[in-house]
Structure formats: C-alpha cells, structure tokens
Image (tube, rainbow, N blue to C red; front, side, top):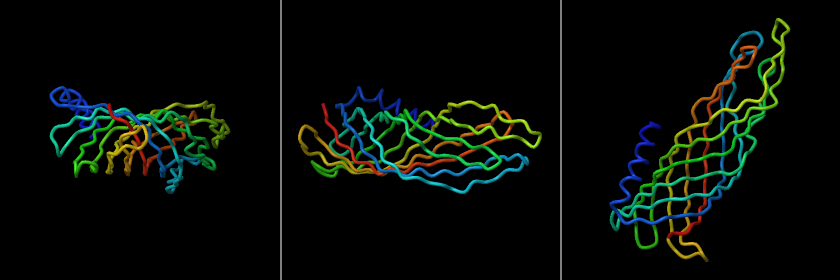
Length: 220
C-alpha cells in the first residue's frame, strides 16, 4: 500500500506539467490523539501483552503544495507537511521487562489530495499519504535477568512510518493575507516498531494517530 501511495504522488508531480496549477503554502494547527498497544518479554522469558494506552496532544506544522486544476469541478493537490518539533510520546513501565521513555519528532507527511469543487468558495477533499518520522528511545532501564546480568542499552533511534487517510473541506475566501482555510480529519496507521535490548528482551508497539486540523494558507 505504501508503494502504491508513493507511486501515485510521484505520478501526479509528472502529470502537473500538462495542466494549469498553483502553489499553496501555509500552516496547520492540530488537536490529536495517539494510541498504542504492544507486547514485551520479561525476565521470566514470558511475553506480556500491553493494553492500549492513549494520550491527547496539540501540535503545529507547515506545508507546501502543488495544486493541479484538471477542470472546473476537480483538482488534485500534491503536498508535503512537516512537524518541526520533538514531543514525548510515552513513558513505558515494564516491571521486570523494559522501561524507557519514547519521543517522536521530525514528522514528514507526503500526501495526495483529490478535491471536488462544490462552488466558487467551497471544496471537499479526500487525503491519502505516507508519513515518516524519528522515534527516540531513551532512559532505558538496566534491569537484571534471572542470571543477574543487567542490560547495557543506550539510547536508540528508530524510524516511525505509516499510511495516512483523511477527509476535509476548504473555503476559498480572503482571510487577511491568506486565501483559504481548511478543516480536516486524518488517521495515521503506523507500522509496528520493535526494540531488543542486550538481554534479549523484546518490546513491540503498534500505534495510530488521529488528528483534527485547522489550516490556513496562501496560493500563488
């Protein structure tokens, strides 16, 4: 699925040369929820399933887009959104398993946004894309095994990736120096991540992120 999304975005960039188009820039403010569940192995070599946990947060991002006008009722937007911050995602308490702090940042989202033009000022759109960011695992506990050997793990950096889906609406109207405002809802389904420490304890996690976003931007 990710390869199909990336191929579709790339093909849209190539096709843009055949149509009238414009460039959009702007910023986005989002209110979100991140939920994660997973499993871990303990000193007794058993696997413990962790129940789903979630957290609410707010974040800002900036975006740049190329909007392709295919006709007076339909357009396609190819965009890139960037979250220029790092935020704490979770503190993991594993008992006799793995304890750690997890932070995420530098989140890029490349997306394709088919847009249906309702009238001169209102449009409806869908969104599909691919997200990639950095995941930092720090403060890993040095817990002993049954044989008495402590973990010697340091900080770990991993890549967080996933597919993005969403819907939204746009109003084309002057708002001071800006040309449009959007309201959208998106969901990012991240791939499973896994960490194995020096004692061969394994921590896995599946995460998904839901956002309600308000965007304002300008077209050139």
